[in-house]
Image (cartoon, rainbow, N blue to C red; front, top):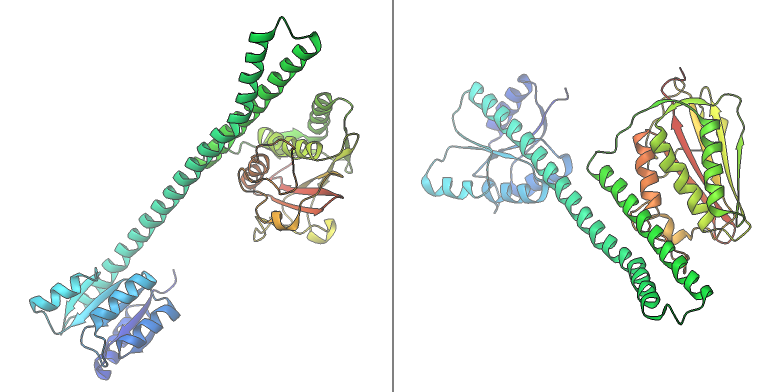
Length: 392
């Protein structure tokens, strides 16, 4: 365990050196000794100690209580006061800074050690609690935003269904067969949009509440990809061509089939959606027994750019989804994986903006990485890299 860092603020040089020496013997690191409040604030911000031992009476215009208050509000660093003063007025002022301890001089080394340890433990607990509350608030804010955006997104298809139904109800005898079919097709399309949005919202909700679990099992990726491509090709008929290529002889890996379906179906769906009619969307599978960055020309960048892949112990599965669609403007690329975010050039193309957020969550659960290359008007290539713990 790393030594806890302590800043000593004491204007009597002999006392300060004695305290520092005692702290070092007890296993603490003394980051600095300062004699006034202004310098204490500066050193606290600079060195980020775990605790400040603060005398109340100091050199200069600022006393230890005023300095401790600024350190607490600016740096969230706990303070233990060391002082020869124990009058009611001083104690009253000191309490306002929420101190983590108050030791009257002269003191025993054991008392100093116990007070410091209790203060450090309390601060650690409070920090964890504060972080937990912040995380909970962030989740609550996101969920509120999701509900609000979902309600907005559901309004359009719902209005289309209600409008078409009302038209059929009031004018069914006057409408020709072609118009009636058009109304029914519109209702069907709107219903499908609503179902997709609801399904995406459920997946995102499970991910946000940590209920989207990673359940890996051996999977024949060639068969999986071929079946997925066949399914999606039936859905788009002849408007687009979806092709699949496997560049490796081996294709069995240990991945989560459900999460992989989320990843590839969303990427292929986007490729189809944002490509011109008759365009090709290509899915490529590559399996590497031992992954090395130079062997693929792919860097693990993007949302997981700092992730260290388990090289060379695990095989690596690489999926590439390439389209010749509208491309992603540079101004949109930073926010591409945010829920409900849609690029500025999508125009009238329908979508929820949840697909890539789901892809990101599913890739993270695999401890993988995703990156993309895109040029407006020329298309986009997404590369997903998923480590496989074992191929048995």
